[in-house]
Amino acid sequence: MCKHAHDYYQLVLPLNGHIDIALDTFSGSVGVGEGICIAPGFIHGFTADEQAKFIVADLHTVPSNIADGYRSAECSSPANGSLPANGSLLTGGAPTFRISTPMQAFLAYVEVQLTHHISDDENDAMIRLFSTLLAQQQRGVVTDKRITPVLSCIHQDVAYPHTIASLANIACVGATQFKKRFIASTGIGLREYLIKVRMEKARALLSNTDMPIIAVAVNVGYDDVSAFTRRFKQHVGMPPTHFKRRLPLR
Image 1 (spheres, helix red, strand yellow):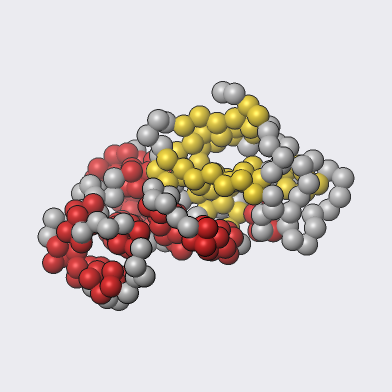
Image 2 (cartoon, rainbow, N blue to C red):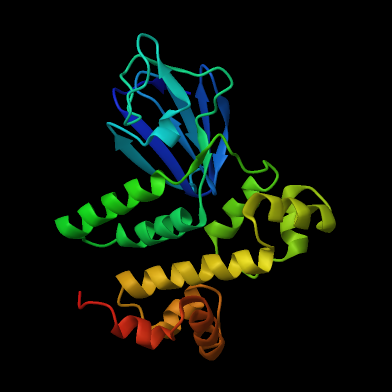
């Protein structure tokens, strides 16, 4: 594992799979539903599976809720939460944070958006929204490590017919224990989680591609367009045809 340091904050946000990160004060795996903030000047290294996908954001400052895991070796943290390059980790602090539902939806949107050309205005809008959402994340809260590979599996192929039995096998627990751990980690049951992830991906595909609705449905696990349309309307408040018409011309 090759190690290095930066003179800026680096945030790593997995989209699928997980990344193993090692710092002097932290060593562990960060997967879907989590993020990690590496402060300026901190030597770190990482490894990841070839199929893993993650967003890396290099920032000169981060909100105080993320920076609170660090403090300067020479001075206290300023009001805006930013830290100089000689920061050090607070005793017992963790550089990880849990990804909220709105942030997870935003990351799904960004994943699609970055595969297409975006204007400077669109880029600036994405950065502003990312900054707003980042300020809402909870630092130091991590996902159950038995559930981390489950979330990675789901996000790697949202169209796959995931079941409690197959995912419990990945988590190496029984079905009853799996359901309890999954709800504790995500706040909702597996069925609701799959619907949320699939509909957010559908929303992103409809917003940022010219993909036909039937293709969008298949991409998120629906062979029946009528069933997809009903579910999308329940989740978004309007059928996909109306949603697409409301979008500005690209």
